[in-house]
Image 1 (tube, rainbow, N blue to C red):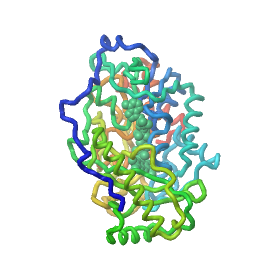
Image 2 (image 1 turned 90 degrees about the vertical axis):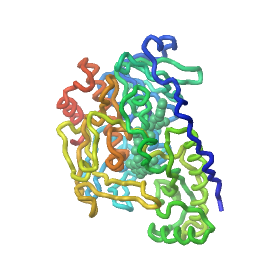
Image 3 (image 1 turned 135 degrees about the vertical axis):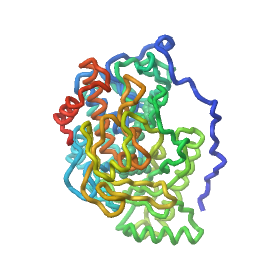
Image 4 (image 1 turned 60 degrees about the vertical axis):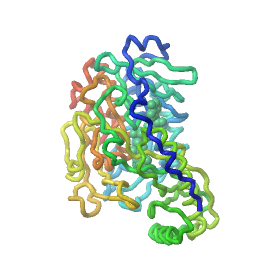
Length: 456
Ligand SMILES: Cc1cc2nc3c(=O)[nH]c(=O)nc-3n(C[C@H](O)[C@H](O)[C@H](O)COP(=O)(O)OP(=O)(O)OC[C@H]3O[C@@H](n4cnc5c(N)ncnc54)[C@H](O)[C@@H]3O)c2cc1C
């Protein structure tokens, strides 16, 4: 049995171990300037890439800062299916704009297919991740965004309560970026945290979704169906010959022949902002991936000739720090299919909570928590992107302002693309109108979004 997980690796840094994350304008001038402009987007995942393209298309001089070597984030490095374009239980698309432009380009190029979800989360767009990376390169350059890879935002520059730039750490040392608006699309709310905005912290509530290392296997024939795989998993785990902490999860076909993408492993009880815990999680995730791949090859019909092709670029983080913004989206809003006057996006994805032990909780929009997909959707207010105490900053992506339960619905890729579109557009419009982000005319913002293909 493959059993490399050693919980003693998980050490918590002492509370005093805070780095310097907030600089005044006066202190920041000691760092050499790398870039200055209208909008700096931090984090080049789905939300950040969408934000940067839309800010630039609206005329803002825009920089996109990403710590890794490609754009697309979790969608390109961990996953291969975008959910959220279609609500659960309906084929009527509810997300358009830049998100659908990207998905549609992949579909038209034969780099993606529409695929029904096994659990009823709605139809997904299953794409080739390498093609997604290239599509973002193309979109960003066409829009005139300045892309900056291999640069990690390490501190925020503040003028009182206003964010006016960030420090990025590069291999040539730290540099200063100044911008009239900053978009926090880091997924983990790194900028909002550094700026001192109110956040819900994973270590406080002790209720955070588990992490998953996805993996791909090649050489798959005609595989057994998911219920049969689950039955075989339980049998293999009970035999004591395999260590399978999650007795469900799925493997699905991809656009590549014989290649299957999985979502099976589960590493729970981790605060993803703790570097020691994340180190242990990466090691454990890889170990589990190897074990599940061994199980598939040994026990599942259709996988007899299969082999492990790759594990995800990093372990997938579902949830970390989240903003506590002008509005906090709640489970009642989600299940009640609530609409808002300042909605900037729609979502029809179920609450998909991997929090509970070896299983997953599913609750659908437009139900009282029981019953299946309804095809309904709810609105996400602009206020969910706005910090209460901080100016010059807007948040996009999975660190939006939502409770744990609401977040378990609102975090799909298509929605993160929408939040990015709204944040980038709002940042650019607030610069050109010279108003604070929170004072931006919300009807004008919504009109601009609709003009750009957003469905509201
Ligand atoms: C295991 C797992 C399975 C999932 N399955 C699905 C699914 O099948 N379909 C679906 O639609 N959704 C799924 N989700 C949810 C969805 O993938 C995410 O919520 C979404 O991709 C988040 O997008 P984002 O842009 O907010 O963040 P991310 O894509 O995580 O992007 C954040 C980016 O910011 C960068 N970054 C972070 N900090 C810094 C910094 N300080 N400086 C510079 N750059 C930084 C990161 O490198 C990253 O590229 C899943 C999530 C997980 C973890």
